[in-house]
Length: 197
Image (cartoon, rainbow, N blue to C red):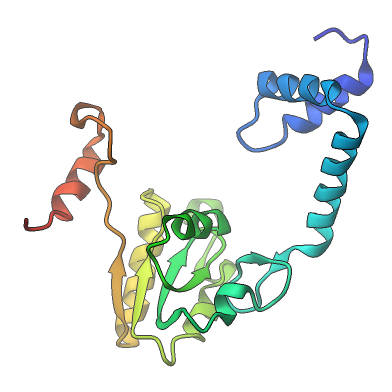
């Protein structure tokens, strides 16, 4: 990009800091904003500031919310005997979009990763254990990574000591994909999670 506009260069630089946005995408977004009306860009800026000022973590499940406790934790329609443990609020939102799960959630805020210096004490795991009085089952829905598996094993061990039923969401071959493109771990998990027809 030409350095004829230091402000435009600064915008590209700031947008490049967003997760999943490289320099090319940041340039496309910058040019998109330039083509929008001033009122549309101002509305986006106001919304960003409002989100930063008003959205916070739920005091119970640690999902993002404007009022704490969040609407999921307060809902009388939810099955309060089941808690689904997820890494981040984005995982919770993905599960909610399915419309299938009707229990409660707990966002632990990451995964155990000794190499990165992240231990169970750095996550919202202690708060999860404090919620288990009337819970019959904990569903673990961490990502299928080494750190996700480490976190799952830790939670599984701790739940067993508390006599809580622990389950893991099924993993395997996604709909619409070909077996030849699946990695070895995905195939192993698919066979482990097979069901009788």
